[in-house]
Length: 335
Ligand SMILES: NC(=O)c1ccc[n+]([C@@H]2O[C@H](COP(=O)([O-])OP(=O)(O)OC[C@H]3O[C@@H](n4cnc5c(N)ncnc54)[C@H](O)[C@@H]3O)[C@@H](O)[C@H]2O)c1
Image 1 (cartoon, rainbow, N blue to C red):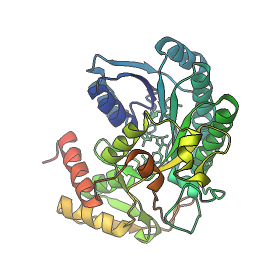
Image 2: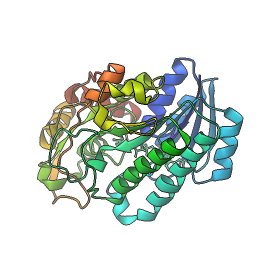
Image 3: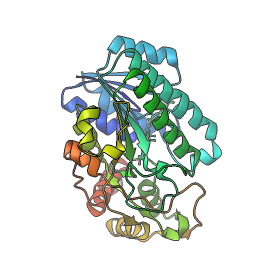
């Protein structure tokens, strides 16, 4: 099958692209290769993907309508998986406009291009951060999401609304995936596991927000990739979905929102202890107040995804941390 993946040099995009290429799908990667974090990591991921004959790639921004449309017209993907975005809650405090360009204008271009060539299924990344200051856990798709705490989260919520409107007017089949703190090998240097590991190994202070009194539903990359792959051929279909959960359905459009998480909340200080245990070394802790825009806890309810696909996350945080650290040491040649 022909599948176009935006953000293919990113953390999730790389793993997904590689896995689909291994299954002999034809994958077109589209990524700006921006320098939000270490470009070498993105290049190394891309070099692995380029070894596959069934991989094509364009380096460009999704805001660039011309280039994007050219790729869509030429490749004619059946499935589009849109993962390119300016990610990160903290960076959105200082650079809000970057988020508007990438996440609002760019995502609009993807929806419009997908509609024009009538893709079979458009899957797009949203985020658990849309649940914002919600107190009730676990977070369910039918919960109200009216209190985003950062511009990053607000752009993801806007993406969900934009997607629903296009799905309503043009009947574009769209699934929005709310990811919950994805981690694992080739992970993002701006995220907790990478930062803590690097800091501890280099004897640098590690910043721990809200003094570590936070909970996260850490989701291992392989579980996420498995979940996305199970969904590809299951486009939203109003009639079929009704029996699963009528409340989370759009009454008018082939549209749905699904959580994809590990369904366990992990106390941040326990997460750090486990990293220290694996590294055999204590970190120098720098306890900080809660970062503006951050949420204190996340926990997913993934029953809807399970009912549709049989999704069943398998990796607990202890074995996930171990796999990440093995990769990290190998990649950075640390003995
Ligand atoms: N990793 C997580 O825990 C997590 C959680 C919630 C949501 N998400 C969402 O999942 C998606 C993938 O996240 P990730 O962790 O792989 O992030 P990532 O930053 O590693 O990957 C994003 C990729 O998109 C590319 N990109 C960014 N802006 C672009 C633009 N304007 N045009 C073209 N390419 C652009 C980047 O170069 C990067 O390679 C994002 O939409 C993110 O918001 C991720």
